[in-house]
Image (tube, rainbow, N blue to C red):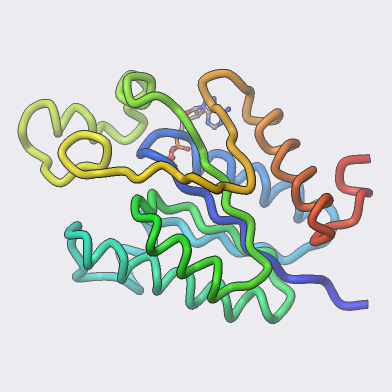
Amino acid sequence: MSDTGFTIWLTGLSGAGKSTISKEIERRLNAIGRNVEIMDGDVIRTNLSKGLGFSREDRITNNKRIAFVCSLLTRNGVACIAAAISPYREAREWARETIGNFVEVYVKCPLEICEERDVKGLYRLVKEGKKKEFTGKDDPYEEPEYADLVVETDRETVAESVDRILAKLVELEYLSAAIIG
Ligand code: ADP
């Protein structure tokens, strides 16, 4: 039987843990022989979405492009992970409708903790006035109202968050229970 494709859509602030969680999910899925594609927002902005800015319109266009590619991969049996801030509900809903086998995960972490982590040094640039239109600071983040799952990365370990995401995929019958067995 061929594998069921699906997309895990991780949304959350910069530094919340989307990339970290993606890589760990990829490792776990590769271990059971699944093909995985991570659509990382930072990477996509250097190719597929090169030239787009950070206005509401451009952010939505960026997310729709990611969703479109995810829809192609998903229908071909790939386990797809989108790791992009995706601050607007409108774009996330478009992704859900376009992709079909879709799980929205809110990677939740208080802004202050993301600022403390400052993994990419971006919050420092914002503080120094060298970066504008930054989500959570001077640009909006619309919290998901109907996420399929919320992981709280200031309270859970990476392994705990990933286990909960995989359990949700089993519950939705996108994955066999063997992954968590
Ligand atoms: P994002 O991709 O959302 O911008 P990153 O994954 O690059 O965020 O950075 C998140 C940081 O938070 C990493 O340094 C990671 O080690 C740390 N972290 C601590 N706890 C967690 C957790 N439960 N899930 C994900 N990341 C976590």
